[in-house]
Length: 172
Ligand SMILES: [Zn+2]
Image (cartoon, rainbow, N blue to C red; front, side, top):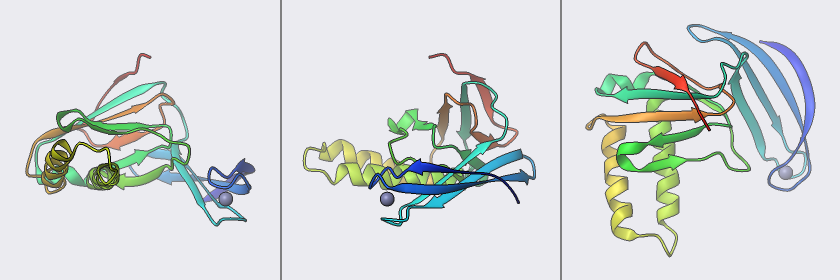
């Protein structure tokens, strides 16, 4: 990996400074990726992101999970991306401390499961709807149901690496 840049960002947790280093990485099947990381001096918050080196414009990336092996597809999930599973009515939107990472479809569903579980632990959460969603997400993680993973990235720097992936322009 080749270091290409160094800059400071404000820590989303404590407001202190984070020195971020960016690296250019040539990934098989994906092409050039920019991976950035840094740690807050003050609170040790780990900042990280990943994105395609070249934006393809605002994108909606659609991937259909029909079989357990579809869970293995590689995902470049940038910090600017919203991830949805329309059939289960769940989504993760990029927050203030959003991170980008390289994962798989299984990892994405696990992440949605963890976030939904957290939201459902709040007092006002609709308990019945919550347990229904969590049950479906468990099945989704095990490849027991068919569903769609949709990534909406206004920066166009996320990707799902598979011949099954469908991409369209994201109109806002
Ligand atoms: Zn901090």
